[in-house]
Image 1 (cartoon, rainbow, N blue to C red):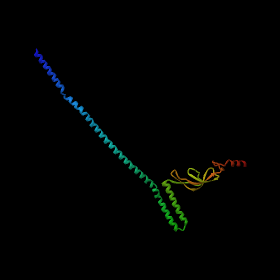
Image 2: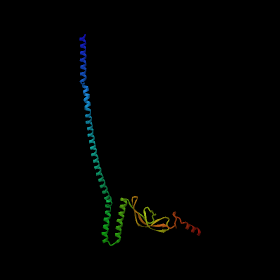
Image 3: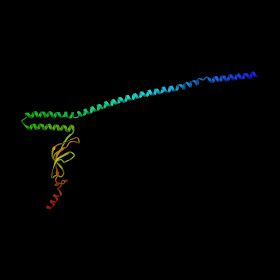
Image 4: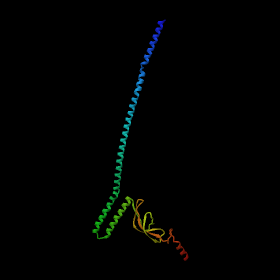
Length: 220
């Protein structure tokens, strides 16, 4: 019986030893997990470095785009300034070109006047040039003159340089010293005029004043 007990004890000791050996030696899965845990920080660092590199590249691309757009805008601004200046410098080129014909006609008239014996023919030539010039300015450039004796006085378009009391119902132009001009509907030069102001003898409705009525009724 003692030998059997001894054999049992030996088997138990042997089993315990094998268990300790198995526990001491790590299994493959445990080794892999530990290796993955050890490699995880390095992979995270590498991933962060890649992200930083991508962000730096994107930042560089954005800077390049901003610089290009700034350069394009500066070039556009310079072109716009140049075009505006050219438009200002040559804005009247068409008008001046149309005036050249009238200038040529004036030169011919001056040359003819030196040899002409009849002043009337010179006056007719100047009148013709004036009519052609006025027609061109009116039809092509919408430049219209205004102001004639008898027109109603309008302080918005007339500049009164004097006045006198007259038997009129409302202020009217007595004389026009300098014509006014409108470009389309805008006044570019006011007409300089002498104005006839009502002296009270004529009412605005065209009838006689109250005094004239009273005198007429008294006479009757």
